[in-house]
Image 1 (cartoon, helix red, strand yellow):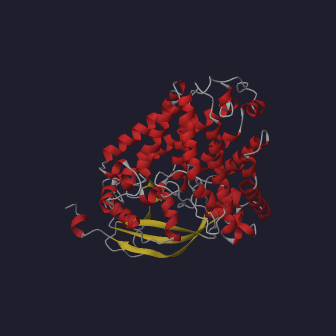
Image 2: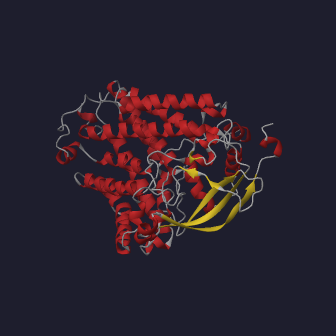
Image 3: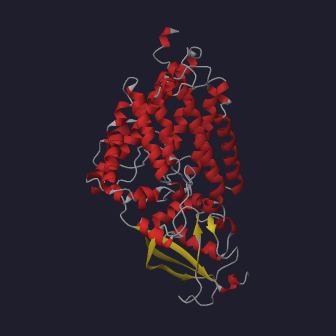
Length: 485
């Protein structure tokens, strides 16, 4: 029917496939990360147990299935359900049915993961959690293969990537002077939360190139996002720039699924003719699916109006002098504001955790270091590429010296090491006691920096570290517990 032609975007079928399957793949990773880590971090016997958190917050401000009851078994059931639904969407199975079927599948992912995030406390206090929630809700209304992609939802997804990119750019302009004087990347590759295998090489690039990097970042985040709303092919060119800059960030660091989310979202601005011109092996543009049924049109327009109304608050925040970073303005975490690294840390301080079996916790005792999967420790070890998988414990270890080491969860973590708690030890790369109990544990701080090429050739070390001070003195269990009673 011609009266709905303004609403239909049949030449964005490739974009819909990327948006739906890409978002579902990110949900799969998020639920897998939760299944592997949540019980040890936040489970019944975790570092910050959810039952205790819920008991202390009888009126949770945000919805969660766990507000009424929590168990590790229920959490694993939620994750298993999320994994199955997201896998089906990655394979495109619900998309073969009527438009309400993939909508229900994505809304189920949104509600299940929101239940996790809203009791996840500090371990889930990351901007990419709310970004994934907003992506899941919005992508739910892209419909199925039986109807053309709805133009209003595609525009809302472009608006989402605009907020993500432009918000991050404005945070930098409002933030530290290092972004304005173009020196931010003198430090960022070295001091970012979790360096990747190429981070050291990126850090060792000449400083003039780092200044060019910052200029390129400002262009990509403050100028390019506006062109996402332009006619084709300008919108697709802008999306290509977003994808290219995000791939550079993927290669030079480990930011969970943040960069991959931006890459997936950028395809909302890319139409089929452009894709076919760049990638001739993709299907040529065609007439597309049948006309949109009136009931689906009504549903999508209601969602469009809802998200437009909710967009008032993040839009106002984008131009505010007191711009908020990674904030939600409603309990459903829709139409959020985003941003990252408004300031860049200039020195890398790492908290090193050690244990000993000696009776007395003196310096002469044999102190052995626990190894983490992602955060720097062993000075010879090449950092791994973990993203889009999210190592939550390692990320919070980076925050410790920036805030305070006297965090409740960190003392709980040290207690679990003294107990040789198996779920906690599985979060680590190296347990120097092979499952046995240490008598004492302690935490020391070190200043880390990347080794120069000459230092690496001479020592084989990728990091040079210098001890600062002991941040938590030796701790031990009560003597009765040391003997297992």
